[in-house]
Amino acid sequence: MTDDTDTATKTARLVDLIQIATGLALLLGLVLVFIELRQAKSLSLAELTSQAYSEAMADFRTVMGEDAAATIAKSCTNPDDLAPAEIVVLHAYYNSKIAQISRLRVLELVGDFGVPWKTIAPQQINEVVETEPGQRWFERHVQVDAELYAIGMGIVEAGVDCTSSIDTVTIIDDD
Image 1 (cartoon, rainbow, N blue to C red):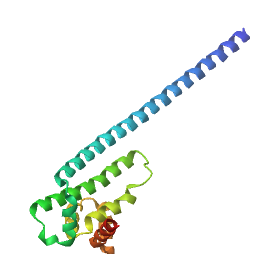
Image 2 (image 1 turned 90 degrees about the horizontal axis):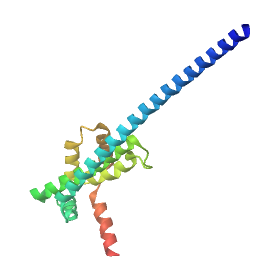
Image 3 (image 1 turned 60 degrees about the vertical axis):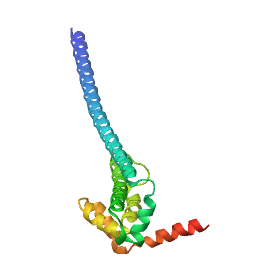
Image 4 (image 1 turned 180 degrees about the vertical axis):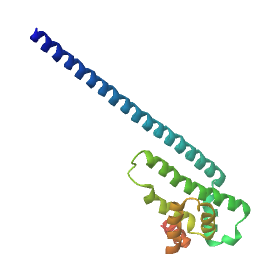
């Protein structure tokens, strides 16, 4: 009888251990499913946001037209002579630059893309704040983003000059 009782006790313990292991496996599986759902949600949100920024940048390019370079150059050399239509082109150009940075920031939230947005942002922002109209636009429109604003104001305080960009283009054209 004792052997039957010992065997029944051992069997009951084994059944209990199997049930505990099964319960833990089920719990672990639920946790993994929850984590995967959160990641899928983050990826979907990043994809939708990135797509929205891409569409906005396409709209900005449409507004800028095919000869935005002349308007950008004029904002450097003759900022007081800008026509209203040229100011609209510049606003689209500046918005496009900031949208590029914002898009990278969103994508960086869900994955590592090799180059952090903070590495790319100064170059993009410099192209906005290197002219007087760009600085005024930046100060008015980017204040709500303290981090981006700080990067831009750091560039402005360091001193920027749009004529160096135009000189570089002239040198390239002369070759």
